[in-house]
Image 1 (cartoon, one colour):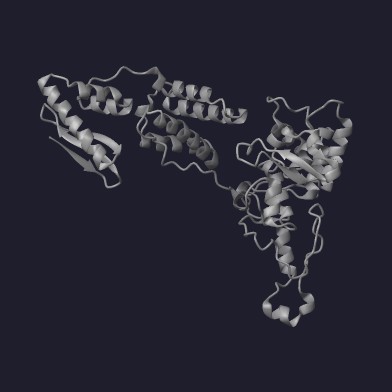
Image 2 (image 1 turned 90 degrees about the vertical axis):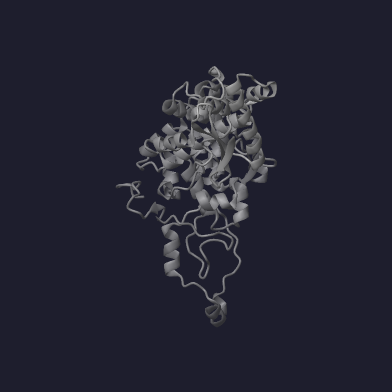
Length: 435
């Protein structure tokens, strides 16, 4: 007779006495009591058939329908013969087949999946059977990644591994996903946040080698455009000169209904570089950026050189920090929902990954008393007034009694000194540049 055991977390196992009198266990993983009862009956039949030598047709069909992982567990305790190894279930071949079958993904996503494959194969081996990878193996893989990569990169690669094995579960190639419990959400890293001041950005733009590079930098810093995906997708037909706005195609979010594109204002800081590039364009050019469209072009490497030539130490996240700086700047003047609509993100994402606190906020707070209900009653003339403003203009004189952020913006945790991180761990300071 067989019995059912449980660890209290929904994971069950079958315990039985084999024909040779030894006690054996088969792990079922997460299963209901009813599923465990049904499996127990089949195990008892296999034990009896192993003694009598006769094989029941119903049990044979049940065995044939089991996934390779569970069949291997039965074979390990002597209840059936092992199946021949299937090349399709080898780790490397399985991932190759998965990536090849994803005709719906973008080129950069395919590159990311390829990076995840290389790391998995480097750790587990090309021919490692999927069913042999356990939760403990997955945890060791995570530690292996953390030993050579940043925390966020390791999380991203664990997320890719989770994606591969989730597909294998859905295809019933394996019973459980060993990577399910691993952390895969990418979190904000304050040490890599950096506020790029206007003075720095303008110095870099002046150093750019041509008009197209000036547009790339201006779109990132003053338009908050994602680079390279949105920058390279931008066409001259998207620039609506007469309506003072630019339609920004968004390859990253085009799969979400209503988010294939968005509009941003034609900010004054953008009009000049765009007009210069338009006048320099060859008749018939469709895209704004034509010289750097080759997928082999590494914009980040080129941009790093440009920043260095401007006499500035490159900041941690070259393009993201530009976009983050613009969102922080715009939040000073416009409501959060408006800024997020222009930048193409949500307020939650902006709070977690974009908005920053700069030294200018501390200076303004130190110089201006914060209004209270008592002081407002005593000094009605000092009440703040509704003011308009152009986001393109820097704030020169802070309004008295005005809070740093709009009322619907939450405080951030990243403290910077006039655009420069205050913490000693930040290594991205300018030496002798005047910035």
